[in-house]
Image (cartoon, rainbow, N blue to C red; front, side, top):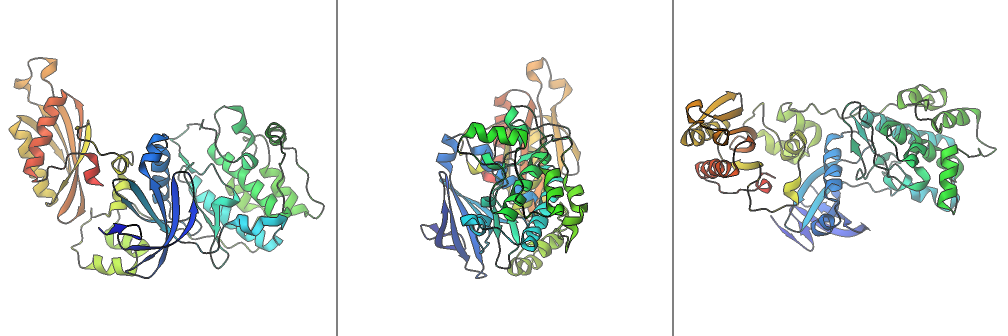
Length: 434
């Protein structure tokens, strides 16, 4: 892969767009399509040293699950020894902040259109259990047609059913009051509050809650202490009052906002790009990939389990992206191997490695469980239990995920090395699968 100070892979850097503590964002051009992209360049060492690895992983993971016209899309992730390159959709219109600078307010029609697009995208996220948690004008981009795009999911959270979030985050002026109490909170309700602050700011040109003293600011937010400008209409006041409700239990939710009369004026619902996970590759590529990639795909034999690298990441049980950060020599209790063989040949090699160690094999499709045979077990120390799953990335390219649930690490390592030799691939760390 080509990479240097002026390029990475097929992308050639053009100019700097933004810069933060751990990442830079550069405009680049895809030399194969001449399309502009934005590439976030993350310094691995700085992220790991600052204990922000999980946050970066979360951003990549979350954005790969979202396919909506009002949400920035990730095209590709490239990892090197020192950097992570997140190749994203380039949005040329700048931040919403730029339109709101110098205290200027937007017309009602423009503010409503942007708010409609914001709520559409937020509702889409919430329906998938994803909460942004840092909605503010700096994270809302505009394309050349004035359409809104949500960016920067670095603070987003995926919630398991029924769980309350506990991490206080977000920007002070846009944060919901329940986040100030250090108790659990509903991520959806917190996002809706931030949307209400943004709507107020677009219509008035100023923030509903603002104070030089952070303590006074928090007091105002906690009490929902704000004043409507005289020119706000009854419809605007009604919807904002229901959003900026300090009680998250009675605060209006996205589906109710969409039904509001003021919101419904000139409303054109967005049409999400629905991704059916594990659908046929041609359908996936037709919906999301470039023309060139789709044409190349037609020349590859189709398989019902054929997926691209991003779907592989998004389908992993815990979407583990640690291989982008870590280069380890020691075999862990969960590793991945690359196999340049068909799925059936790869399964045969796994069975052979198990036979060499006198392990019994139970197979279900492309998943296998291996145990010590009963006559081999003389004590609990002799018991060994592991599983393997084969995931087809291409017709002659698979990933084998191996995990151990019982047994000594030395035995696990012996199986791992045996299988590595059978696959004629000695790459032994999780990074080899990425």
